[in-house]
Length: 184
Image (tube, rainbow, N blue to C red; front, top):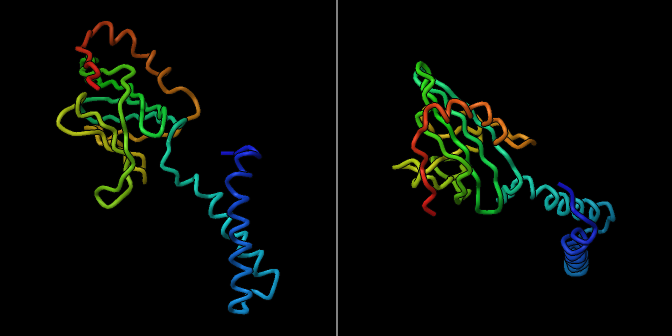
């Protein structure tokens, strides 16, 4: 992710000024940092930390996940488009393997999500209790596995994952499943 010069100027120049002030204070009070190399190292360390901070960002907006999973009884395909810091759009289909009948289907449901720590690891909690009781959807960030019956594995994609659902159009029309309504 890149940032414009204006964004860089407002974000990092005050930080650089603070680092300079701190190093000057340490020099005066403690007589430390006599070498310019040490000053440059500390400044570059702090700046590189803030440049890497977006990698562990809590804002997933703009990211897309395409997830599939199957077992002996069913096949699941779910896609997530993170719209903002707290909203996600979901498309989901579950197909019975033998009869090719659509068991469940959600189309373009917009709901909330939250990044948190559960079960000893970082997860994305997508609030789908209104779509699929009794639990919300959990996506484990370590391996991008979804907490559905077939445990779909997700991939971060740079295309619109909802376009892949066009392949299920005939199955959806033939099965006519009861579409869950968004109650948010």
